[in-house]
Length: 205
Image (cartoon, rainbow, N blue to C red):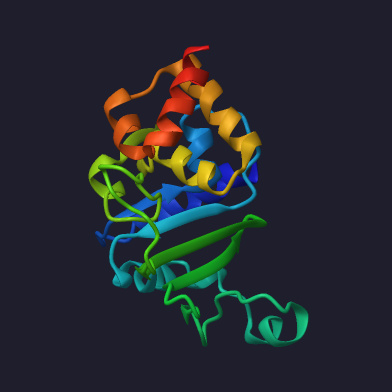
């Protein structure tokens, strides 16, 4: 699968770079690595600090698009050598920096979120957000083709997916939790009180 080639390439380049910064896998690739059955559409990587996006942009420069592609061939933004990182602030106040590539024909996006604009992110009540501050201490680790990879736990992913009402992915995560187990303490913290009562019944069904 091309997502596996893309992830392996990112890991190889990072580990051979002699640089160290914190990053984590989110989204569908992180779900599949934890046992979910779905087909990832892209590889999403978050960095803990803004410098991480710039570092990845430097490491992945060989995959940057030519500037002519940006202007003439595709209306979507992709990293180029001239503009490796895009900084955006939206009317809500949400802001991020990102780099975006095609690696083995698979989309890879590296993001640092600078301002969440009030998206709920708490361990006591409204739930943990998969792009928030708590994911770093609660991250899970897996071995992928000889590489140690950190991922946002399914328990935390589930809260964000429930908020977005993506029922198919909700059910995929619940099936994985039934089959492979889950951390009930993280689940209680990650889910809002309302979501926890619903999910707990479904997992136990």
